[in-house]
Structures are given as structure tokens and as C-alpha cells.
Length: 297
Image (cartoon, rainbow, N blue to C red; front, side, top):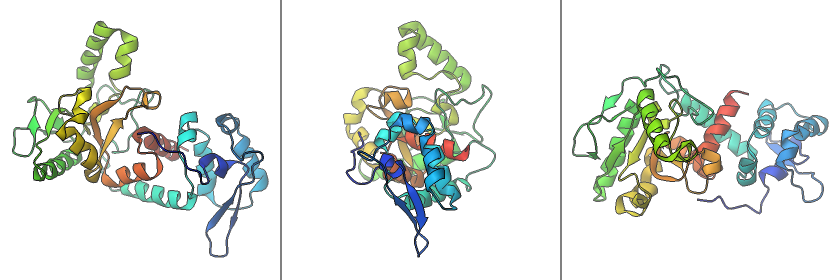
């Protein structure tokens, strides 16, 4: 789903020559002072113009706002074109809630917010802790007998499936955790079949697949028409209520690195799904790129 542009104060206009002051009640005020149309280009951000201007015009002591500006300067041009943060104070409050939520995750495994993509890898020997096998059951159907998930994802799958059953739909789980070795064989097979360039558009190289995290599920037929089925429509409408996020939405191949996959959902938790919808045009990759940059600033 494409994110609609807002007529109100956009991300660019927030940062275009802003000055920041504290009101009498302690809230942060951001005043746009840009010239011309008040917008700033991604080139301005990457060149450091924002950082330079903010140092000259801002008189404040708010480390989070300074960090917010730095992190934005590292976001992609498309991120900056689409993401509209009109209330920085509210955004930072929500971000802090999300990071606090992460503190409750188990500390002996990768975070549910771990950024894994074509630039961010896991090792060949990484295996999620305490994988739970998916066996034949009354809640959902399975396509194979070698499926498994991390405990958090398994519990969320049960909850999603219970809700679907209440609406007369039994979910079909077709793919879950994949080891590095399994993904290596799969990717190599696709390369032999379609060539490297095409294979990389729909298959992950080993070490870069969300499936290795043990938190991703491919539902149904794993075909483009699944999204139009009764099951697919139900999952689209309700997945986020149980913490499941569509990983590769239509029209964002330049952002995610992969073609649209209507069947591929990753468990990230309900709060993260809400955060993603509210601030990141419901694009998982945008959110995790920002969170990763924030934590590494």
C-alpha cells in the first residue's frame, strides 16, 4: 500500500532550517524556517546541511531531538519522500515505548526487531533458541513435517489461527524456519533455474533470510493469487492484531530488495505492528531500518 502524502508539516519541512525551543510547559516546539517551498532534498540531508544549520540556529539541550536529526540524515531518499512525522514529540514517545518493549524480549537470542536483509546478515551457524516443531493439530494445517518456529512466534501463530477458526478459516502454514544450509541449497537451485539477477529478486542468499530467524511464516499456496483467497484476505485484515507483519509489500522492491510476497509474514509483536502502521506507512523495512540506525547511532 502506497503511503499518501500529507499536506500538513512533512518530514522535510520539519527539518528544513528548523529551530527548536522549549515552551513554558516543557514541550518541544519545532518552527519551520525554510526558504522557497520549505522543503529540503535528500541531497541536503546527506551533505550534512541539516546538522550544520541546526547547530547554528538551535538553542536547546535535547539529545533525542539531535539524535532524531542524525538518524534521519542516514535514511534513504525514498524513506524521506514517504515518511511524514508531523509530531516529533509523539513519535519519540512511541519509539521509546517500542524500545522498552524490546527490553522484555529474551536476552539469549536475537531481538524480534533484528534487521536482516541483503546488507545485514546472521552467521552460518545461527539457530534460534528452543525451536518448536509444528505438528498436525486442530488449529492450523501444515504442508510439511519439518516446520518449526521460535516460541514467541509459535504462540502468536496459535493465537492467529484460533481467531481465524472463529471466523471459519483454517490457516495453512507452508514454510517457517530455514537453516543457513537449507537456504543455501534453495537459493542455488533458483540461480540454476533463473540466473542470479532474477533469483535475487525473490530468494534470499543464505544468512540474509528472515526465515533463519525462526519468526517468519509463508502461508497458503505461496503464490501471488493467495492474497485474493478467503484465507489471504483474512490474514491481511487481522495479522497485525496478533503481531504479524507483511514483510515484502507490493511496490517496495527497491526498499525491501524483494518482489511482493503476499504470503510472507514476520512476527514482530503487536506494539511494533501498531508503530509501523502509525509512523512508517506500514512498511516493515522502513521501521526496522530506522530502529537499527537509532540503536547504532
